Length: 72
Image 1 (cartoon, rainbow, N blue to C red):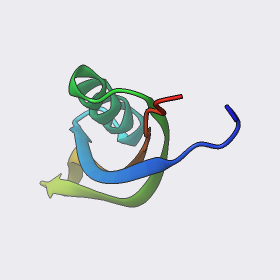
Image 2: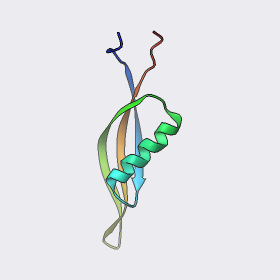
Image 3: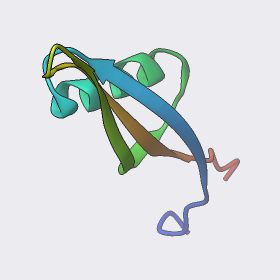
Image 4: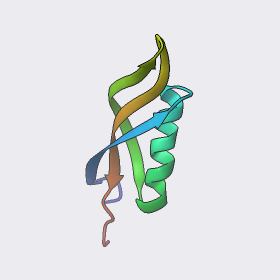
């Protein structure tokens, strides 16, 4: 049954000086280098680093869903 999938969730933190969307993309790009079957993500936390009253860096915590490979 190809419609029944099992997933593992891991938590990662992406960062970027450009914005939260870029931080998400950075995290997923790095994860995809060593993890297979990435299927989805959810943002669980957004925070940033402030310097001189301005946002200097964005950090986004993600839960990433990895589909477990079936032996069928």
